[in-house]
Amino acid sequence: MALTMQEQIYEPFGRVLAVSNGTAEILITLDCGPNIISYKLLGGENMFHNDISRTALTTGAQMDEYYGEGAYWHNRGGHRLWVSPEALPETYYPDNEPVAYEVQGDQVLLTPPAQKKNLWQYLITVEMDKEGSGVTVTHRVINLGQERKAAAWAITVMSQKGVEIIPQPDRPTGLLSNRIFAVWPYADMSDPRICWGRNYITLTQDPSATENFKIGLNNEHGWAAYLNHGCCFVKRFSHQMSGEYPDGGMSFETYTCPTFTEVETLSPLHTLKTGEWMEHQERWELFPVQQIPSGKDMEAVETFCAEYLK
Image (cartoon, rainbow, N blue to C red; front, side, top):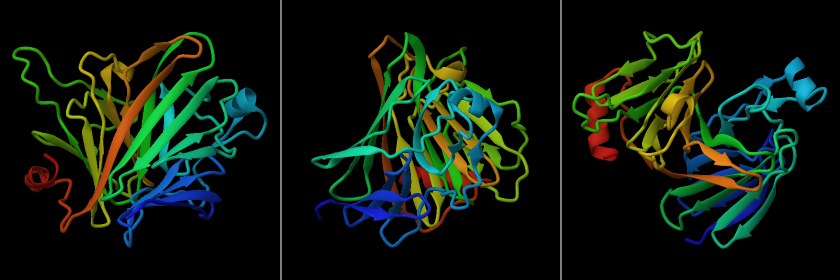
């Protein structure tokens, strides 16, 4: 089936571009962002979280001073592009203006306005396969300011009550370590939402939780999965063994709170002169599964991964 692309209204986010191939559908915000606000199999549920109530706002004196009075960043959910390392207010750019887009064959090129103050220009190219559920998302960040060092950071905000699966590095290194972990100050290593298995780590989104949690690692396998609504979402990326990654070597990070879980991949750090750019690509897939293993049942997780994710 040929791809279809048409503008729609998707409240409360306004205009979106709906892209479908008859098997899967994505919705991309056009009045803000851009965010890929929805990804689902046709007839299925959105795998991404949406902040319909507009409660996930970053505001305050730092935002007002840096961006202007009343400035806010809205975590709408879905998929977005950021730049790492994280800093407040710089990272939390108020991306609340319309986004230009151009259809180039099967690709959609999204160009939000250049970021004032930060002097970054984002370009995102989205291409859905003609068949199946596959989507390729290419993130480009252009430096409009002075020379600096940064990484592209692709963040996908997942819906509630799902289970994330992250493969652990298993490269044989003899007497040397092969895994690097980063743990954020607010993360309790004994948090019941996370399970540290032999080959995999699982993180379960729990709406009843009261604390936030975040870790990172050198995800040398280059994939992570999120299971929910009878489906498995997989994102794949290239981990560059020789690359220098942010946050002490993290090519992958994940964050969970009572509202959602974020599945995050990062490019290596790049030193960019004025006008230079960096690029980071993800490959997505979505397929139905008959049974979702509990994040606490590592034997079931191993079996699931052997069947679906190897």
